[in-house]
Length: 185
Image (cartoon, rainbow, N blue to C red):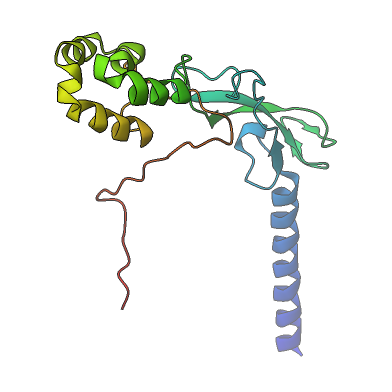
């Protein structure tokens, strides 16, 4: 009999521990900005119809979006209904100062031998050099067409091209010491 009483007590203690743990996890106690993924939904960034870029994108390539805890989540001292915004989160965006990818590529193709593409992107020294050497004897023009088309060369201030939201934007993939490459066996 004492063994069954001991096992019953340990089961009751285990159930009490699970209940306390689950209730604190489900309620999401604490700050709303520290909720785990799945306990909140963030709104999509607003896209400007004219420029097809994210509105209010800052120089450090972030935009603030409102996040709403899901219904029944308790944080910041109250229970949310799923419709009320509780905090803002910084999302990645591509900051552009207005240099259009289409214009830069067109200038490079048609007027690249005169350096118009480099003047447009903010590289006046290279534009003047291309102008005085007829686009490095057309070799520099061909090279610039490739570099601009692959978006290796961008505006001189370090911003991104203004490209349609679902346009031909390229993202470079980098590998470093922290990136693990699994070789096929």
